[in-house]
Structure formats: structure tokens, C-alpha cells
Image 1: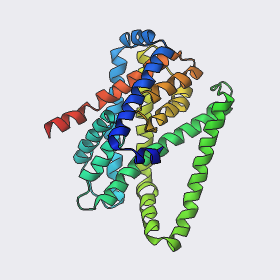
Image 2: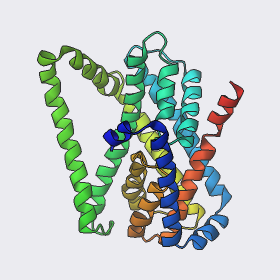
Image 3: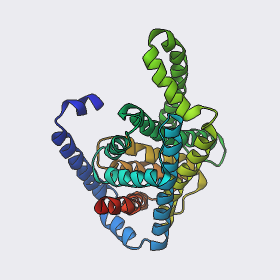
Image 4: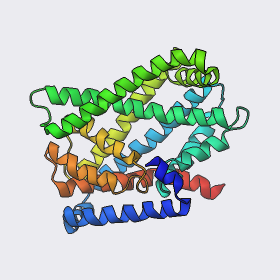
Length: 308
């Protein structure tokens, strides 16, 4: 996928992402009772939607703190106001343009003074990776518990096999990196230095408590926001669904086929949330509300860009 994207002119690739986003949403409109989705959205409770927005704003503030901690481990000093301002702007750009990472690249460029673009980019990349590690850890633990625990989720065998394979591959990849790290010191000293920097930014004794604490809080904010959207359409999510299914839905947003995950996220919600007893129509409506809440939560970033 990445190689295909790299071989296409940027305009063609971005246009294709908009087209795919529209096509997926149109297909979901027909497959999941579009008029029913519209009625569900119209009847959504605004108080729960605002709760989701607040949770996502808190997630952005905590993510800015995590960026500051990660950058400091690499020798890059960021003031908290600057980190918050840049993170909100990055969120606004990521919500507006295809790909979902353009805003992060821009904040790496704007924060590069004193340490250079390479270190600045590594800090941004490691901060984003820390977020994915935290979410994946929650997913893995929750999947194992809900799969083995009687009364948990009734996972279809095909789904369980795919998720189990993902967890296994992640464990093997981690072991591979640890083994490779030792060999790189002799074979590729420069590459080894960058790997050591990345490990220091995430797992060194000085930053690990902050990384774990912030990772837990940020993940809970994301999951709570999605849960609030479920409450808004009258479909409360169980803890099993919130911790085992919602992370899967959020991970699909990383697939760089659409604009900010739209369409892919709603499709995965339509497939996965019925496992927790949520009707397809309400599942799609919940995901749509989450996307709207993300846009509303990025408003401070849009405001900063307008005032600059």
C-alpha cells in the first residue's frame, strides 16, 4: 500500500482518498439503513456529544504532555504552551486532510530548531508510536480476557484468529527488534544509535512512568469519547465492548485509504459492534458521532491557525 501511494502523484493519491471516503460512506448508507442513521443522529443527545468532545480535548492536552516528555528524553526542550498549541494545530490538519499524519509532520518541522529535523521527527514519531503501543496493550489484554472469560464477548473464530495473529506478530516483532538492537551495535553503529534513542524516548527509567501513566490516561480518554457517543444514540457500550472492540475500530483509522479514517471506521463499527449487541444502524451512527466529536475537538487548532 505504501509503495503504491509513493509511486502515484500526490494529487492523484489525495483525490483517490476523497473518492474512497465518499464511496465507503455511500455504501454504508445503503447497507446500514441510511435514513435510520440520519434519524438516530438527529435524535442524539447533545450532552453526551459534548462529553465526547471534552474527552477528546483532554486527550489532545495529555498527548501534548507526552510529546514534551518524549522530546525531552531526546534532548529537545519544548515548552508546554508551545507543545499544546502545535498539537492542536496538528490535530486540525490531520482531521482536514487525507493521510492522518500531515499535521504531525508539520509540527516536527516547526519544532526542529536547536535539535534539527531528524531528532524532531523522531520525537514526533515516538510519541505517536507510544500511543499505538498503549492502545494495542489495552486491546490485547481485553481480547484475551473477553475470549477466555465465560460471559465475555462471543468472538467468531475467524475474528479471534485474526486478532490472535495480530497479537502474535506484534510479540514476535518486539522480540526481533530487541535481538536486532544487539546486533546493530556491531554491524550498523549509526542505525544502532537511532534505535537506542528511540528506546530511550519510550522505555528509559526516567520516562517510563510518565509514558505509562500518560498512555493509560490518553487511551481512556479516546475510549470514553467513543463510549459517550454510544450513550448519545441510546446504545451504552459494555466494558467488554469498550476495551476489546473499540480499540479495533480506532486502529482501522490508521489505514491510509480515506480522509481521517472516515468510512473505514464506520465500516468496522458496523461489523464489530453488533458482536456486543449494538444494531448496525446505531453502530454506524455512533462512529459518525465520534468523527464529528473529533472535528469539534480540533476547533482550538483551527482557531490557532486562523489567528497566526
